[in-house]
Image 1 (cartoon, one colour):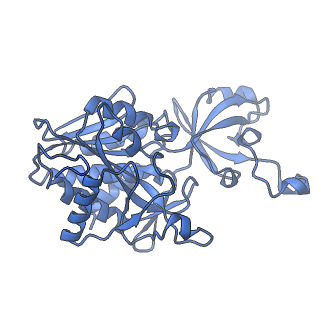
Image 2 (cartoon, one colour):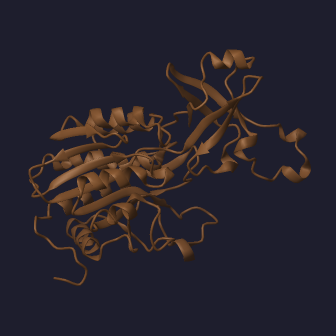
Image 3 (cartoon, one colour):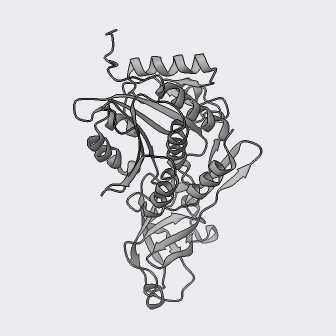
Amino acid sequence: MLSEKSLNFLEQLMKCSGPSGFEIETAAVFRKYISQFAGRVYTDVTGNTIGILNEKSDFKVMLAGHYDEIGFQVVHIAEEGLLYIRNVGGIDKVTVPGTEVEVLTEKGRIHGVIGKKPIHLTEEKDRSQAVEIKNLWVDIGVENKKEAEKIIRVGDPVAVKSNFTRMGKNRIVSKGMDDKIGAFVVAETLRELSTRKINVAVYGVGTVQEELGLRGATTSAFGIAPNVGFAIDVGFATDTPDIEKKTLGSIYLGKGPILSRSADDNPVISKILRAAAKKKKISYQEKAGYRASGGTDTAIIQLTRGGVATSLIGIPNRYMHTPVEMCDLRDVEAAIKLLVETIVTLKPGQTFIPGID
């Protein structure tokens, strides 16, 4: 079970706001927490935060969870004081109107709401269509452009208002679960490993700008040059109506993390993960994935320098890329345990070349 201290960190991390490219607040919370147990911690020029255990070892294991989130950015301030925005990352446009947001300014968070024309004034043919982001605006309650410009600048990032909630015994809901829950798993895996004997160096990384093209993983993996890389991200839960299991598989909240089998997953590492799960009786779920490669930090870590043995660990997630993503703490706990029990078995000199014993 996660400790009260860990759960407090989880809530603090989820309440951070950091759209891709603007992860400063989230990085600070992540950095402060892992500094309590990592041997060395630093944030690089891109914004990735790296905590290291057993740095003296030449054999390096990288854990990556991206702590950026989807959001918006101010592109224009209208005469009425309304803010026009563009999306940062893949926004589900259907869920955007009426969303409470916060403009992240140099002087603090400014509350706002995303507005649109009332449905009563919308033509019948347009009522069932998602409104384009360029035709929405953020209303911050001011009366004109001059008043808005006193507190807002063009380029300020806009995040969904913090909304972390515990639901029932095991479920958690928050904006930005994708993928601050993965960064949380990285931090907790580091914490657990700091109390265990390990034979390898472990680099726990909170990566940035994943939603814009895996950019933080690109730079951090190149700098670390790991032998093995685990990316922890969210994966689609298919336990809700109208999700086609025949193409996406059967993935449930609370039944364990997702172990995928795709071109991004090294067969040797995959075998080691499953062996650890079997030995320690850790529940997990199998998934072939909805694409053969790509979409997570795993893909770019794998292609770093001369190649890295990688594997993706997924946390089942409902309502991805909306303001109310949902995960289950049992899956989080199992992912942490699986990573810990796998990493303690790794030793310098191991080969991960497929088909070579």
